[in-house]
Image (tube, rainbow, N blue to C red):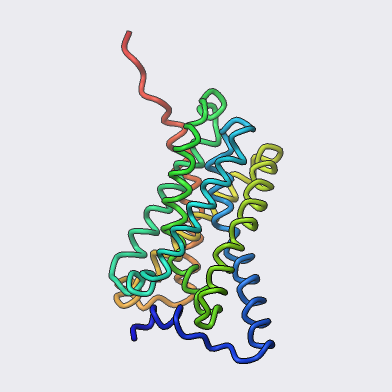
Length: 238
């Protein structure tokens, strides 16, 4: 039996204490991992009208969880492939820059929201990219119980909805959080790049180098977005 199939077909929970520990582990994992996804969602829906914000958050979160269930059966193989996390990390960096540009500067103030479905699409792309490690963590904590696995994935919906809604409101009041959020995504992208199988085997990076790259890319996201804003839209010929 392949490892990924064993994760969801062979339960290793024998006592009530085992079940309780598994549930607590899943809850803690969901709380910790909800942060990165909440940042993406909060940035993606921030420019939407107030009535569409919750709809965007709910749709993005619900669709993402459905896709995570499917990803559970593929994550182990995908993580073992070269370039998968490298490509995902680069995609997250692009999303971080785009969301930061869309949410800050003069262009953002005079710009209408990209639309509900554009926001949902960005949420899905980012969540799929960042969820390969996440689904494995929840699957491992489920100890082979499909019920606990679905519980863990389902629990992430209200956690992400609450956190992203709170973040989007705080971003309205304290715009500096937008930059912090984008930098966080830059850090996530850096971690994905440095832990890609091919990169790890080629560089054998020490922990300090991984953290250094994460820091450089976190700052780089902000600098690239600021440069993009300063360049501004191309002048139109009349």
